[in-house]
Amino acid sequence: SQQGEEDPQALSIQEGENATMNCSYKTSINNLQWYRQNSGRGLVHLILIRSNEREKHSGRLRVTLDTSKKSSSLLITASRAADTASYFCACGSGNNRLAFGKGNQVVVIP
Amino acid sequence: GAVVSQHPSWVICKSGTSVKIECRSLDFQATTMFWYRQFPKQSLMLMATSNEGSKATYEQGVEKDKFLINHASLTLSTLTVTSAHPEDSSFYICSASFGAAGDQPQHFGDGTRLSIL
Image (cartoon, rainbow over all chains, first blue to last red; front, side, top):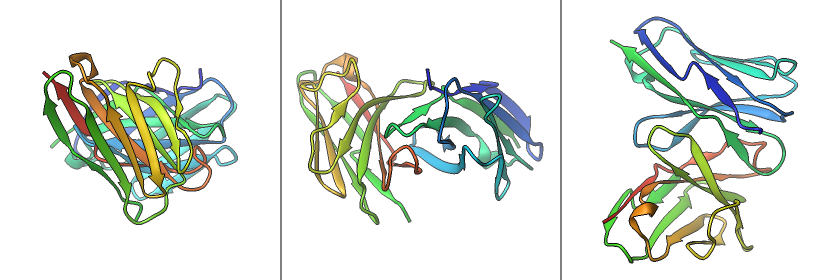
């Protein structure tokens, strides 16, 4: 299966702490994307990292990709209460679609 | 930029009713639109991929006569749930992308919560 699998699936942290979540996948990819979903809303694209990239930053987000281990990580630094959401990784493998993982629920306690 | 509008956001209707959900890309032309279904605390399940002017491609197990998709223009796709029953109750989300879908970010609508009584 191409589907990403996030780990841990639920994370509760204090505001100001860093939150790290991992995503593993099974076959080759062109890119890996991370999305955020607030409760009852659609998904918001956070960051896309291509298979020839190893690390990417966007504001307080840092994404790494290790294609040899078929894994990616998303780090949110200095978390805020507004970061409370579900985070999904999604694999793009050139077949005109994305395969989404099961999601990772993050709760940031003020 | 890259705003996708989805309407309605909430629908409650009686069993047997057909429900139409609209998905519009407001500030870009979407070469591909996607329809997903999401159950509580679960991931997105891709239902179908829709390209402007051509028939939608449905995922295995999704009834094309039950979930009618029309992609009439580069900015509008519609999903019609025909003769809806309680088991069709779910959260339906559309997304749109331009360029090679799967190689670009997808831009999502805010979803439609469908409740069939």
